[in-house]
Image (cartoon, rainbow, N blue to C red):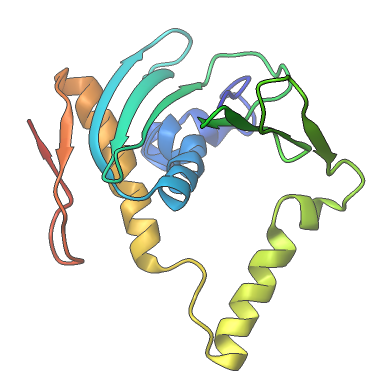
Length: 189
């Protein structure tokens, strides 16, 4: 995930307001990785400052409790080269890749054949998931359906971002514990 700058609006570069670049922008990607792959077991993170007073470049290695692992990069001082967000998932000679919320590409063979689905023509509310979020929220209230996203999900995203900063600042990997809602979910190695 790359952001071209932390200049507009002015407050995005103010860590006292946002909590830092990862809270301002990247927290959503941590949330998505947890949604897709489960709880994080171990995190190694590296960061550096280039353009801003705060850490603006991150490289993160994650190991999930499922045994899956991920490589994650986020930069606040990149350009606005499209796509700013990209997710690539590889397994069993198959790949699924996104380019923003514009295109989904799937390949499930070794012959290079792929299927591309474009979301370019969808309204922003559908493409970015806002309409689906609204429907799920209303359904939870009106019909008593389980909430699609819980406060616990939000807490876990915050903990992942805090752990990332801790790993960068300490130079040590972060080992996550299986924790209940009342416990802290990570500890320093």
